Image (cartoon, rainbow, N blue to C red; front, side, top):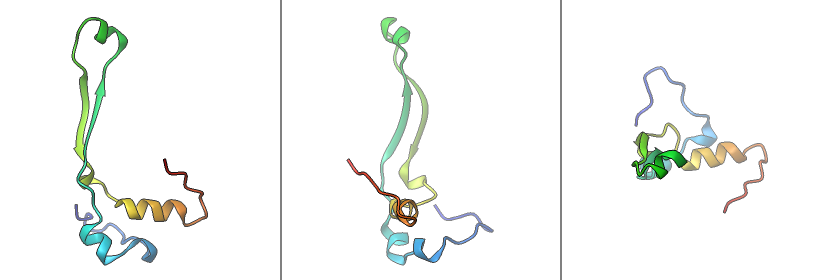
Length: 77
């Protein structure tokens, strides 16, 4: 989504036109809670939250760039 009016622009190394146009991922995100007791009682999980990664403030590329700019050793996998 667009940044709110008045929000500062990202630093230059985080701002890329190509990334801004197509850097978002469309992934449904859901958080469910199922305790051992709920499971034993045959209850369904309780939804705590539902969103989509399209609603994220930063793109994945921006998060990786920001995380690694100071030499952080990323460990994918």
